[in-house]
Amino acid sequence: MSDTPVRPGRPSVRRLPPLPPAVRGLSPASALRLSPPSDTWFKPALSVVAASAVPHLTLLALGRLDLVIYSMAGSLCALYGHGLPYARRARALAGVVLGMAAGLAVSLVTASLTGSTAVLIAVGALLAAVQKVLCDATRIGPPAHVIFTFVSSAALFAPQRLDQIPGHLALTLGAGAFAWLVALAPALVRREGPERRAVARALEAAAVCAADPGPRNGDAADPGPDPRNDSAADPGPRNRRAAAAAVHAAWRCLLASGRPTPVRRSLERLVVQAEAAFVAPGPGAGAVDPDRLRAWAALTRGRGPVPTPAPAPGTADELYGIDAERTALRAREARRTSRRALLCRLGPGSPLLPVAVRTLFGCALAGYLCAALGVGRPYWAIVTAASLCQANLTLSWNRALQRTLGNLLGVLVFAAVLPVSRISPLALVCCCLFFGFAAEALITRNYWLGSVAVTPMALLVLEFGGAHPAGELIGDRVLDTVLGAAAGFLAATLVTNRRAAGRVERALDATDRARAAAERTGADPAAAPADRDGSRRTLTASLVELREAGDTAAGEWWQRALPEQRLLAAERAGHRTLAATAQRRGPTAHAPSIGAE
Image (cartoon, rainbow, N blue to C red; front, side):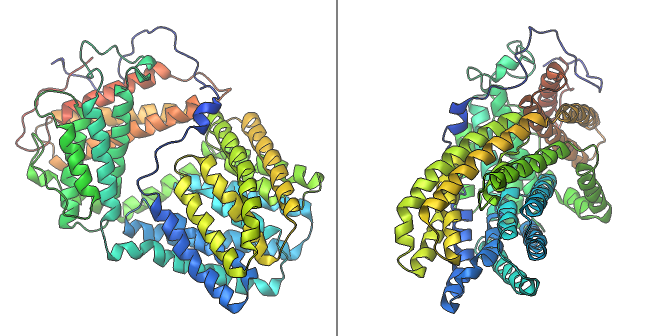
């Protein structure tokens, strides 16, 4: 690394060979490829079974299985918030339950006031768009808006009277309250469980980066910001980005976790070690052994004591706490700032609005097409189109393939299991619980695999209200799937998200400012340790946001040219600044000056 000081500002950009096209190819193979299962796949799977079993069995004992759709609306809230610390999860899940009840209330009132299919489809499409933009703005999920849309759209086409609505909503809120208790129950056994998993992921990602860092930032071997560095032949930049995202997620989890405890103090030390490993990976002074990081990750994920590592090189003991930042986030001004940021994400210039328009257009088109063809349950097509409306065209294409394949295979599974479900009401309840568990167990491998279980569960829900001809259900579902997928993808193609490029430019400016601030505090001997760590965390967060914005824009078509060279140069400069400032982390540390290109 050069000893020439860097002036704050934008990183210099070299001329490079022509870049590949910005829009990524629409590859069926990559869309259908299976991934390793999530490390927490069993948590939402078990939660939704536990949250559904008690209301289902209660209604079975009362002989009112026809009300399952209303209790299921509350039970499905148990799918949310499993990555959040329990203090934050309690607030988030309360919002999910109230949001679910609000959407259901709109649907029930509409269904009781009109029987016009055209009006019901319009209301369903509007609700889907509102649910999509709110879930994206609050970043609640997975499963994000799809569950809300499924519940509200299904309720639109269920017979309803005004006098029934209070009782149905009470059933939803009661089941939602029970789902809230189920989702928070593990806190009684393992209070810091979410934080431990987040830190373990950060350690594992840092170990991968330390084991295969690629060319070091600033080394002569580093070819500069060339997108070909992201190829499979050189996974170094990709590993650094993954490690940065995991470390950022771990810090966010710890900041939201509530008051400090001895376990959380140890977890903060481990995140410092993970951060030191990814900002300056590879051999050299202070390098962290990847095997040691993996061993710490395994112990952190387990049920035993959290490992307590020695201080990271150049770090003072008192810097492990993040009390000042946690206190600042809880201050009234910080809460107001957070609310203003949420309103900005929902404002007229928000990049989320084109996606909401996609959802509105796609769901309405799918519903009206199905109604024109005489399909009796157009809400299936509405839900299919809503699930396809993703952040860019590439993701929408992938979801179209996954949803279509999963649903078509799922109707075959439904045809095979239908005779078993009709043996008795208890058999029907058990089949629904089984497919609810299977859906969450499989969906982390790939969306299409989870859809194979979701489809028979959604079809079996209709059986609670009475038996239906199997051929009619299968035919309607196949037709709704095809029409919904076609309409959703057409909407994604026609309604482009041209604001994605603007989000990249704003993220670039924020990264430049964060890098300049990190350089100033890193070079200032009088800077407070909390300021140094805070500026480094801000820079890491800006790099994560920059990569997310770049990936979203790269999957969109028909937009203005992206500043790809500046984006890659900013990432490289940001990671180099992190590596330089990592050597000066305590009041007694003496670091070299921050180097330049």
